[in-house]
Length: 94
Image 1: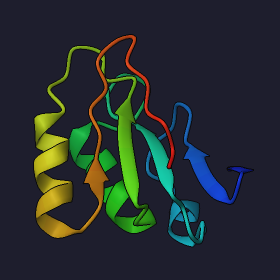
Image 2 (image 1 turned 180 degrees about the vertical axis):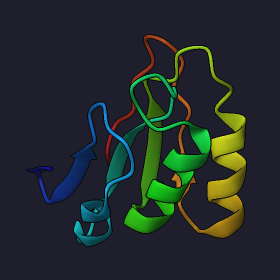
Image 3 (image 1 turned 180 degrees about the horizontal axis):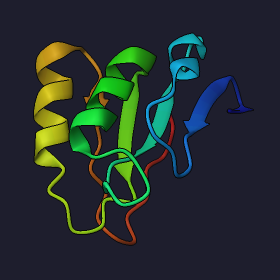
């Protein structure tokens, strides 16, 4: 968890969906791995996003996976904004 200028960012690193994610509290931006190699796959990352319930979620470590499965489930089941970054793109926390 990183807190700066009143915003909280959760960087999950390389992990699976762990129970502690349900207890993070208010998260503005969550960075969740969804590549499926040594990390959650898209379905598990979507489950984690729904449990964390951040304002914005950015899937990372996507490797060659299609993040649309992740986006569709998260957006269908919540008000979480999914941001899909391309290599080299930046996201500014507002």
